[in-house]
Image: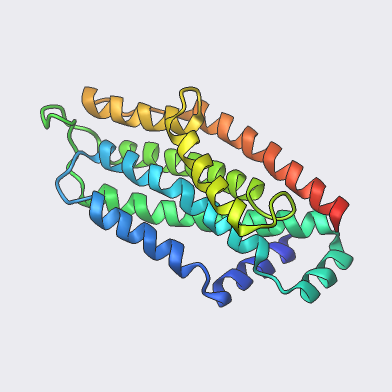
Length: 222
């Protein structure tokens, strides 16, 4: 499985198909995150933008391997494991992108509350932001798994489903993504750093279920 994961990650890197989502995310951060803004608010903004980017990366990884090469990989370790390796490569890439964003936002942001009256410790804020990034990366990967082959083959259906699903996760009460963003913005107003561990556990559980379903279906359809 490690070899398959390395192989899928190498495919993603060499294909350079990761450039559009990464550049789009960088532009998104450049527009919305400015030096001197409250750190927790900026981290919430960055985490929210990562979710659809993670879904895009998942779609790229699932379709990155040529059909002949994928057939060989599936014959060697099974189609389910190949599919899982591609989704895990997307998840790790999204998590690394989120970690880089946390470092940048933590350095350039103002370590205060929204009203600039209460100081906020920079390192705990960065840790909370990283947990939020993991929530967005995992849910985005789950969404990408559900909006890709073998569930949705047509890009005309998959792309709108991905975008609507990301919007749903970000605005619906009870969603781990909505919960973690609310925790960060509320913490910014109060000058208190949240610990969104519950949202992370829920996000990982949902992601595990989505990935299991997608991989099981890929095994049946080959």
